[in-house]
Image 1 (cartoon, rainbow, N blue to C red):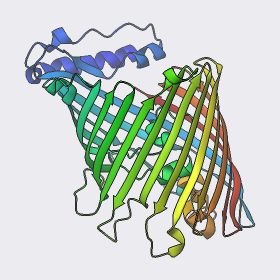
Image 2 (image 1 turned 60 degrees about the vertical axis):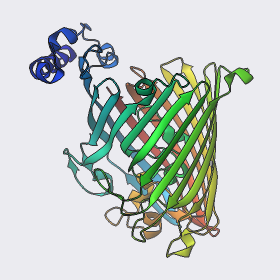
Image 3 (image 1 turned 45 degrees about the vertical axis):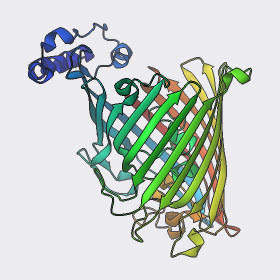
Length: 416
């Protein structure tokens, strides 16, 4: 089925369903699908998920669907405390999401997307293409427009389920991240998505975000019977004070008030993150410093503080087409098990169904070095790209080697 046929089918569905709920002649608000002569990139970048759009309709202004597909594979050659091993993840759907959004009553946006796969093949399981959980679900009020806040360029108030964005890597969507996986340090302060309320605002060169979230775990929207996570983040564009093409600073803070002993969704008591992002010509540079306090744990070795740094320069070898990426991460903890490797894919290798290496499955230590080198090829910008990366890691605990090895990874990512 061609992209034109797919888009034509979506429009036919919209024309059938929308007039009654849109309060008018939906046909007049839906443009005919543009001819793209079989050009997949043109189709992908032309917002193929837009089913209905009519800014003059007082009830429903826009209806659309969106999604992302990310598939990847990794091979690891490593040493776990003196035991050599190799591991092949065999490939997996890293993310397969489908969502929908509705802009209505001129001021509101209702948006949600769901994980549509349960792929446990890297740890010896199976692949099921089915609904798994709600990844994000948000109702947003455009308060700038609703209340005429002329002092702001943006002022949104939202409630729902959202990502926790503290490290600079987590502020970048998985659609646009430069590495196949975020660093272990960034992931440490990026727990699973949480339910809460927040504001997101911009005023000139200054942006700010503040929210309160439930720490309870849930596949959909969580209740408030556990603890609370308080999150604040600020950005400042200081390009005019430099000779760079662009320069921005980020400062974020998170504090978790754990009411429930059983609730371990948030692994820290508090954490801070400070980052600088600079762009000059074909070169981009990110530097991120992170410091925090682990949540008190029954295992004292997993308490104490942690800190680390992430440096990530990128360079366009061919502008907008081929990009080189380098990342160095160093993380340190005051206790023997205060930091941890990513579960993908090293800890998967230690699984009992794979290599059955308990220390690797645990993957904890107090000092972690990581070096990543990658190439990204953009077929259609971030909408469709191929990524290849090699990562060397070294983790130790109390001076003893826990893991040292190299991961070779390949990924394809697409979204509309």
